[in-house]
Image (spheres, rainbow, N blue to C red):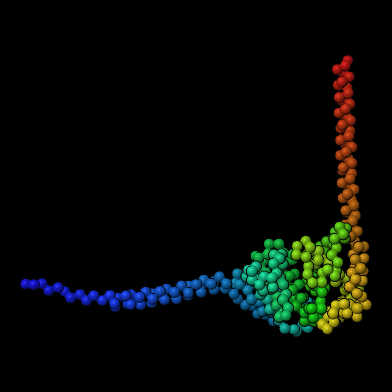
Length: 326
C-alpha cells in the first residue's frame, strides 16, 4: 500500500523574495523611526532649553544654567531703575532679551565672533539683546556676573538715548563701567603704573576697538572709566547726560564742541594732566623710587660686605705667609 505524503505547500521563488523584502523594509522602517525618536529625545536632553520672563527681561538658558539665569534676572530687576536714570533713559522702557550661551561656540556665533575667553557678556545692538556666558565657561573673567549684567544693561540703555554709531568705544565702555562700579580702585592703580612706564593708550586710539590681550584690554577699560569720571567731574552728571542725548543726532566731535567747548585732543591733554598729579600716581612713583633706593642699598651693602670679606681673607693669607717665613 503506497504511502501518501503529506502535502506541503512551498512558495515559489518568485513570491518568496518580494515578501522577504517587504518584511525587511517594514522592519527597517520601524527601526529607523525608533532610532529617530530616541535620537530626538537624546538631543532634547542635550540641548534642553528653558525661558524665564520678568517685568524687565526674558531670559533663554540651558536647564543646567538655571541658577545663572535666576541671578541675571535678579540683577536686572534690582539695577533697572538706577541704570536707566544714570544715562537718562526711560525707566518704563521695553524689556531686554538675555541669552545665556550654552557653549563658547554659541557665544561666538551670537556675538559676531567674540573669541576672548575672559569676556563674560556682550550687548548686541539693535535688538536690546544681551549675551552672557555662564561662569562654567569663563576661567578668568575681568569682572563678576553681577557687574557684567549691569555693564551690558547700561550699554542697552545707552543705545536707547543715543545713536551707538556716534558713541566712541571708550565713552560707551566708560559709562558702562561707571554705572556698574567695576575696577574702581584697580583702574586708578593701573593708570598710575601706565603713566610711570609711559604706556598710556591715547584716547583717540580707543575709538573703535580695544587691545585683544587681557592686560591691554584691562588698561583700555581703566582709561575709559577714568576719562568718563573726568567728564562727569567737569560738567556734572546732568551735563554728561546732555552730552549722551546729543549723540542721538550729532557726531561725538560736534557734541563735545557744542556741550563742553572741547575737542578730543584738548580733552585728552586735560585728562592726562589730571591723572598725572593724582594721589595714586604720587604714591606709585614714591613706592617705585623707594623700591629702587632699597634695592640700591641692598646692592651697596652686599658689595661692601664682599669687599670686607676679601680684605679679611687677604689679611689672613698674609699672616699665614709671615708665620711660615718665621
